[in-house]
Image (cartoon, rainbow, N blue to C red; front, top):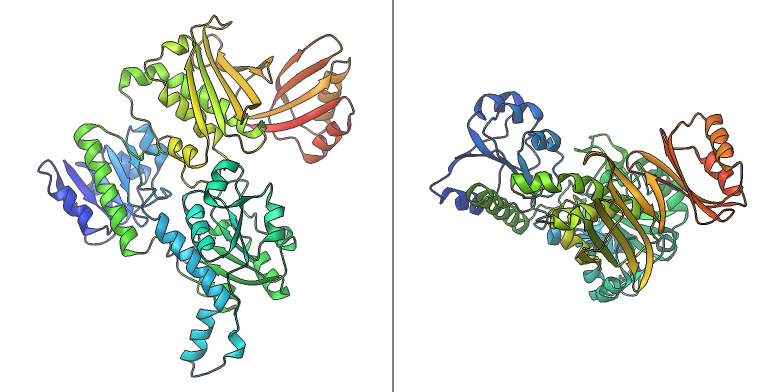
Length: 532
């Protein structure tokens, strides 16, 4: 079996592959372009890459024997995961290899900001001796705000506490119990972190919610002269807003390892600003991290090719073909239930209770379904490259426990999947789903303990209203006036004239003025828009 090592990885990882007689290991002397790779991948069974080589759909198509792509690192932006999935190629990464190296770089940045080390060095290198200009501050007694408390954020917090800092954090999916174990004060919202923190460090992935979150409005809520560190993703900061905040003195100093466009253009204004410390995306650039990633990627590829074991896969769970066909419909339904609850549940749920009823309790393997539910539920969490392989360990890290139950009790539907979210003993929310007619037609049929019928795709508007004449007409007219089309509607009530749950599948997200007008109606409450 030919394994093509496309980018430089640890020699120990390469040696691990070479010692197996089943493998023919070919190490490319330099990075090749797509055009250069196409003629040589025809008999390749596995590819090892870092961030340089692009594994495109054309390359995947040109490699009919390809079974696995191993990424020595976390991100898989350079791999066409969708094309790989369609071809049945497993894509694996090494999510744990750079945790310590990135955490240490982030803390190095904090120390540099506090003591102005890069600027002092530049002054000394220029032949100067100006001690007064570089007076710094101590970290001890200061407050560090950590945005995102996954693996890396938690490691940074540990180091800050060791330096005598008060650590406050924001992560809507980290439980209070886990935060207490880490010694972190978990705050309810970002504004509270902005208000309290002297230093802020970012450890969130780029999502629709985090892209551009550090902008003029956010800076205005922070302490004067706050110091910022970003070793996560450049797109989280609006660069022009940051420059304006630095020039106004609102932000005192910034240390950046990542940028919206990389490599950073030579004429970028960041390069000349005296209050910015820059490094060229060095988060994973330590000998130890590269060695760990190289060894780990070799191990996961070898295990998959020799035994069929899948570890750290980002696209598919490991299942035999027969079992996969049985659970496949439930994977879609489960992820949709999880996404729905994630968008409706109050923060800091610490337990999910999943019930498999009807034919669902007969599934030979319910673990992939549970993972799909967790994947949906944690889809908005600040964890980089969350996937169905690491989702259980991520949930455990955040203090989220999972209970699974196969129930033989009679149910209304042939197939029944029900998920409840708890905080302590308090039930926060529940939802149940089934299939209508065929396994490719999932429906959410119970929400807030009330019957409903939700097509679990696209934009969904939910609200609780008093059961009175005219509500449906009012909503239809209002949405029509703003060119928002209703695809389907479900109404249910507890009693005549009581409370009703109204659910509308929409063709587009309603504008803010629609939501504002609906919420003004005294007979309407709990107005939510979710995207499934």
